[in-house]
Length: 584
Image 1: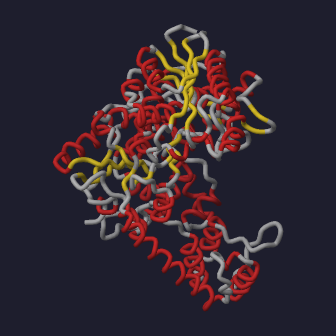
Image 2: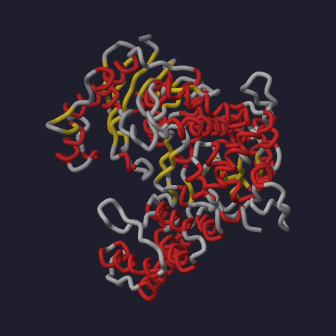
Image 3: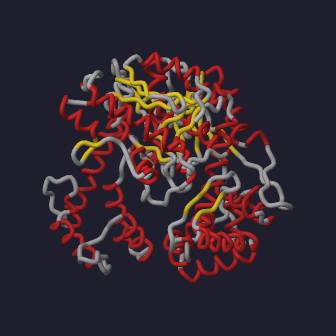
């Protein structure tokens, strides 16, 4: 390894305290130049100076932890370091080299210890049956209390660098163009965690009180209308007595209670959705389903208050650990802040700009999933549909001309939206029917119509399934490697290739943003980006945000000879909170 390459690792106070402004958060650092000896020091400025001289710095989870820690507490210009391409994060590299399976099955597979055992047959230092570092923390009463001169502590840090260096030198560690770009993407998106999202605590508490009151009212409804005992538990309907009462209530409605393999009443989200679809004309059943869904609803306010830090912000964990590369944003989970109803939109009011002189601004990539499928399939008819009023076109295609409503939309637009999306991503007729609330026969007819009108897209889906079965790992047009679960290729292949492409189109938009605006990204929810900008720069921000997400009008083509695809984005109105971006 070249002697101008720096390999390093940090030992810190508890990782949970990174954004608590802990004095002396970074305890010791270990580093080595090329193949040289490892230096362990408690002079962190010494490490920062070394990083400044390095042509390349190498480590594990640098983007997610080590660089943010050095930037926050020791003034490292990590932004410049990443933008100059001088960082190799082995976590990012190996998610590309050996991509993960879906549903979090490989979540622990890319840790430093796991990589060491898989590639080298050895991992981090242990003591007894556990981590040597954890043993030291237990002995001294916390990670921040371990003496920095303890030889075991320094040996642990030194071994981490040796392990990192050996993994970096392994033949499987290959840095391709996609990985180089991904470093820049993840660092830019990581600003959400590094800067954090400011929360209106008073508004969050009000929202939480309202939710608790509503939930108590729904629990009382369960007790009075359906006989579920009020036992004082948080979820009395989940107790044995509660399930028994609900089973009796369902039978009284003429509904056969769904049960697990062990005979217990099963009323999870999927079972409730299936019941609502199967008994769509049973008003009593629909009311019960609405009550149970309301009780189980999580609120963004609750999540925000749970993860609030001393600076009045949440610092959500941002990771690209999903099989498709789509972001996982947790602590708090932003997926609880939806916008499919007025009540969900209202919950977004707890998110506010960085300061009183700023506003929030949001932008969506319109129909990005459709644009991604149009791009990778090269289907001329589908490209034309994706460029126009996509959901109305799909409704017209699958349901025919049955009149238009007062808003200028096809009356079955919402059904078509659910059906077409599911079918494009491999959903069968039965599942699609359940999702859209139509009969299986109608769903089967929709599939036939779509395959006839968008024949090239149908052929692409079949080809993806065949290639996924043969190869298990495919590469997207942007260069991302995607792995499929054996036996699940039918649904995963078209879905993952489309979703990964959509994700990388969004990532390209993020890289297209000017630095001043990228630094102001505060949230990403699905294909929506929220920024906090000065009030006197709103017009500039809106224009740049839209232009960036549209890749500045770039003509996109993957299939030779296919029509070009152009992305479409739309900015919201500025708002004094996130909800106000959508409310007139």
